[in-house]
Image 1 (tube, rainbow, N blue to C red):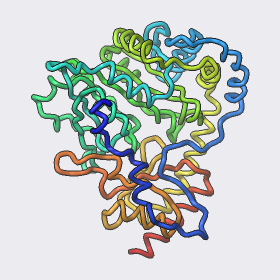
Image 2 (cartoon, helix red, strand yellow):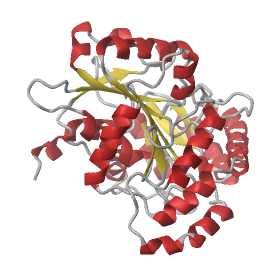
Image 3 (cartoon, helix red, strand yellow):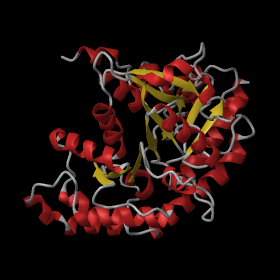
Image 4 (cartoon, rainbow, N blue to C red):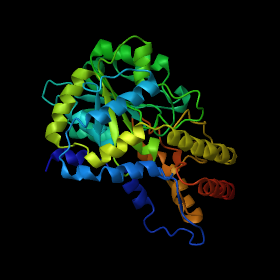
Length: 398
């Protein structure tokens, strides 16, 4: 087997299972799981109907590039959402969820030869796929800490100057997982200038972009930033997904868009990779990308949960309201995130994710240590009940 597999770390949820091994939670309390970023809102019926109506597609092999109708639907959504006109033929690809595409793009991008550029920069804490993609592509991940003292931004001055010429790919996540931080136009300007100067590709993970709290101010996206800065799409690849936007995590449907030359090469890779989207899923995806009403309702439900939960948790935990996404990134009393999560599970039957499991030691610190990620994905009553139990737990253990 590929010896690079031995470099992979256990996934955060495997670590969580090991942390809870032998722990018996309070049997008198209903479990509430706020650890995993899996949407729990109901899948809209019209998407289910479109899936059923598309079952005839089971008799056809799908094209790797996806149907023209799906690419046009994605491009139409991007025009409405970002104000950017994408060419459906050359600048858009449907993918089986952003996760597989974020991983696959690194495999296609990295030159793992002796003299190739083999460094991939990742935020820290981060979505674990970034690290796995780098390691299995034969690259070296460089972790850039996002800390409270710099507003959870990626501080590019922390990258050694002599490292830039080795950098092949930079992953950014906006809105951020787990911090909910959204990159500003100035942030994008700095990153684009670095890319133009040093020749690396930007992989912009925007799968939380449609979960925000004010309809009049959606998070700035990479495509809009590039257009506003008059830069075009050179060396920029954007990833997004229907999972969070449309509550269809089991459908595995997303998009990749950006630099046409890079997209051409990525399409070639995917042709051999065998990662075409089922025509049945394509039919449902077209329906989802073409509708915005269900997304507005989705945002309303998340906003309602944040409005109810944050005042409760503010009494006992330190955190900033996120710019977007459905996480709270909270500092725990005492600073031991794993002990906090284990005892909260044992005594209150509430599951949260220790922040240290989402990060790596870098620059002599694990930037996730002392934090927990709380995903407000369950129903409003369940999230409020969990928040009340957390308040009780902290007060009793203080």
